[in-house]
Image 1: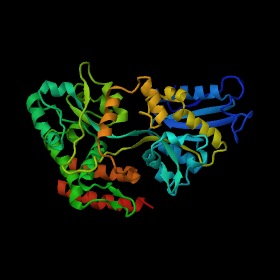
Image 2: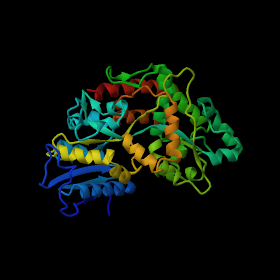
Image 3: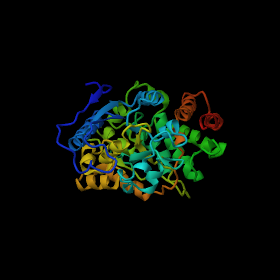
Image 4: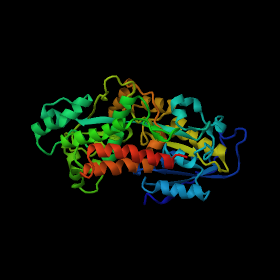
Length: 432
């Protein structure tokens, strides 16, 4: 079945209304039809459809239509639906989409108004705050994610080298690895988008501030500080810390985890979202093993500079005809053990306390996912980055400049100045 095809789930029989649905203000005895949209891979689709079936078994008067796609094109589809007032009742959204659809906080249904149904006490204050705009709780985070360093332990053991634990270790690792194993080996692999997040962490550790100041609509650093991002990219690519743009391009337009050098351990590490690590371990050749590394910290840094934010969120359509029924569905998926077990870890480790506790008791949180949680708990994570950092124009602005540097069109100094000038101009245009 096509992943872009709408999948209709129907209730199973007229089993009567349970005590859970017979609450004040609920629609009882009357058939209610809800729509829910999300993106993901086949595992996410299968898990979510199973959860919706369980929900409808429990609430026979509520029918849910699942509308699901891959990530590519999902934002454009949702933008069209919201503009045409045909959006689903319950929507999976990206964190920064809040600034696109709800700049003043009124673009989605305020979930505070549904706290008699959605158990908001299951979420930490910082997690809740990531969905708040102008006092309105626009969305709830399913899971938090951060980019961490993972290394191929097999490759480093083969070279007789320790896995990098500091920035200096990383900067010096490429030549050592190349000397031991040959020209095809690199300390880490990173797309331009991966490196932008890595470079951001490096700068934020120095400044102790979010990279984007959305009040003044500017980068929160000096020209010299943002130039360090260009310098870091140049040093890593010159010294086999990470493959050059030209070398990566030689493998064609394939997914990072499906590149031959990653599969066989020639790309000896990565800087990835902890929520996505499974798909990278799954493609490794037999005998290759991935390991989480300590997160590097600059001397005197008070914050790790992690881009620690919701991996994805659920929001309710502000125009829904059935806010309470939609809230019932949302609470089931996030806070009910049956819904949590059905959803599993396909969207990461749940932010809901009861969701996390349920899967932990089942023994589902283990391996690199558990290691990542332990590592993040050790790190100073006090800053919250502006969602405008992930705006497509900001993201593309950084990438365009780094590509020009990577292909030799700009020097490090020129790339740094262009980042400062161009990204500030973009922020001035997009933040309103």
